Picture 1 (spheres, helix red, strand yellow):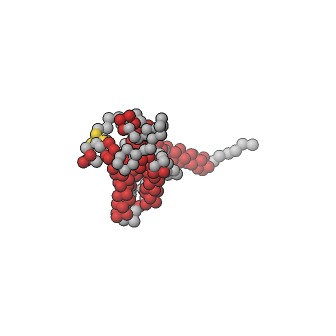
Picture 2 (picture 1 turned 90 degrees about the horizontal axis):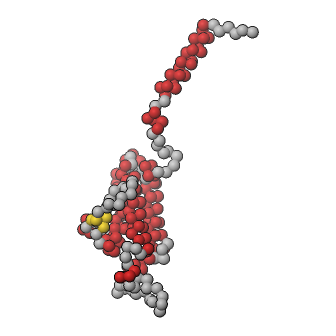
Picture 3 (picture 1 turned 60 degrees about the vertical axis):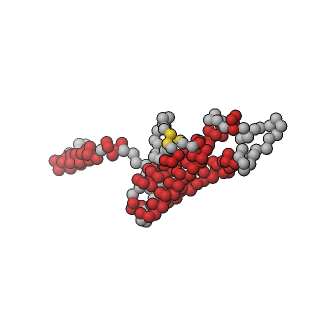
Length: 196
């Protein structure tokens, strides 16, 4: 049995195919396809763009500081600032450890806990810089007003300044990282204490 297709049916099918092919060709914009904007997961570009995200970022930095310096490392920051000074001295057992009681031997860049302090301080600085960058680039419409946004920026800047207080106290002049670092750098220059 043969099917007869009249001119009207053929023109409808032809028109439909033409519209489909044209919509596929016109609808494919390579710039839009290749530009991936994360909408279904958190990233620095969208995590801190509103008050809820900024509040979570500040809470995370606060928790990180608490763990790294006051509870998780057995309070070594307090020990480093006190032991071996006129405030306290580490009791020595005969033949035991001389932890922080001999600064010439124990306090050098190769000492693991000194290196840990340095790395932990700059990890906090980087987290604060990510938060500051996210809040600064966020749309003002996401915030109740400019004052709310500035309040969160001020808190993030406090958490960036907090590690520098210890860095300057313990090491004096040092690298000042006041912006987001997207790649590692080995050529940071020292900044004077007065500038930090």
